Amino acid sequence: MNILIIRNNSNAAALDASMLLAAYLDSQGVAHQELDSIPLSIESVKDTCSHVDVSSFDMVVSLGGDGTMLRTARLVGKTRVPILGINFGHLGFLVNSSEDGVVAIVAAALAGDVVREERASLHIDLIAHGEVVASRFALNEFSVTRGTLGRIIDFGVDISGNHLVDMRGDGLVVASATGSTAYALSAGGPLVAPDFKGLVVVPLAPHTLLSRSIVTDPSDIVEIDLSRNPESREASYFVDGEFITLEEPVDRILVRKSNNPTILLRYKNEGFYSAVAHTFFADQRS
Image (cartoon, rainbow, N blue to C red; front, side, top):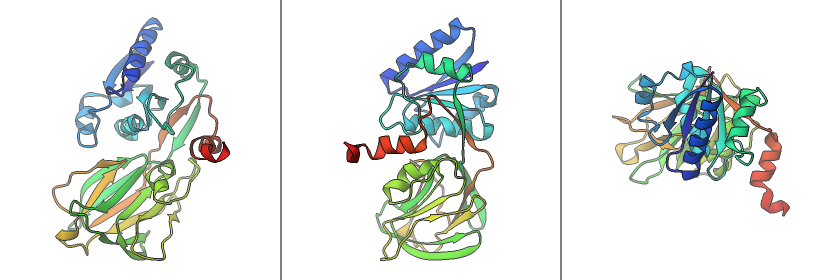
């Protein structure tokens, strides 16, 4: 057994938990390695991957909040190594409560007393002049928004080769079911159960009286056409909330479900709808 621990190194509680966990694993003769989460930005994760063979680990333990989990999922990428997230952050919708203690939770995972969830992730291709200039992974969402000048952008949306709509507004979010509880939700999108494998497409502040979110089939590909925007309306691009730096503006973006899901381990799993009720509707019930 070999475990990779990724801890939020700006969070004192997560750092303390990582030291406690390391001591426990040593006492059990379990091999482990620790990494800080802050350096795992979208621009540096490839450098980290070059000296860490993620596929050699049997499990990854993420100590932090949902942000740490997103960075962990980016590092794990297509390897399908299961991730056990333990919450030392704020909302913690993707991670397990730390109430029982990090040792008890990891011990349960080592004993197989957890639930495996396969979460659909996203593959994003950014295209300029007919060529893919960058590809990215996302667990939650990809978003295209108005750029540094703050002007609204024009964009077209096609789904699997069928032109759907031309829009003007702040941009667009394309989310997985997991990401439906994040940016897409705040933009007015639907809550989608995590087993769903399709995509959720949500306009951002569209300049129209008619606007709807769209839920796609798992096999659908969402194409965003940005070719009509002049330099004064240059767009910005974000993957799981992190800004993507590109050498030139892109003309089109293709977003589809990745062939490799992200595996999450759930400890004392309360179920999606119970978590939704507890997280989003607690104020209404009190």
